Amino acid sequence: MTQPSRLSDSDRDDDAGTGGTGVGVATKTKTRTAKPALYKVLMLNDDYTPMEFVVLTLQRFFRMTIEDATRVMLHVHQRGVGVCGIFTYEVAETKVNQVIDFARQHQHPLQCTMEKD
Ligand code: TYC
Image (tube, rainbow, N blue to C red):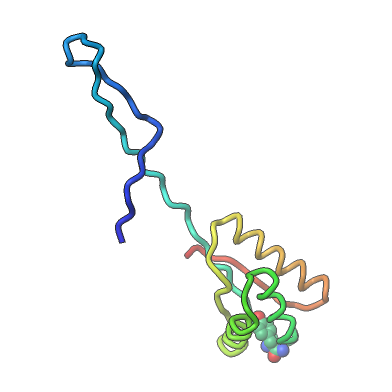
């Protein structure tokens, strides 16, 4: 879908070519802002972390319902890896660290990583 174009602050009132009347034509210069790069946060399977702990982690840090968290946890359990969400770099990095810290506090080997989307 095409986004409506945004206009920058560089509005001008240029009175060139109006014979010095002081009357200008307002013009706007479009400045396109680059979309930020996005990163997938991935949860990794292991043999020891309890399923309920993974579900709790997904609910706490990725704001998932218990149904979505259970779905993602079972996908990771069966396939080895699964996507928790897609974020800008700093948000993804924060979530990875929150998951790893939370798991370590509870002495679970649960691992989480990120990759460019
Ligand atoms: N495989 C774990 C078990 O059988 C459960 C698990 C699921 C662990 C997902 C990590 O990211 C994970 N208890």
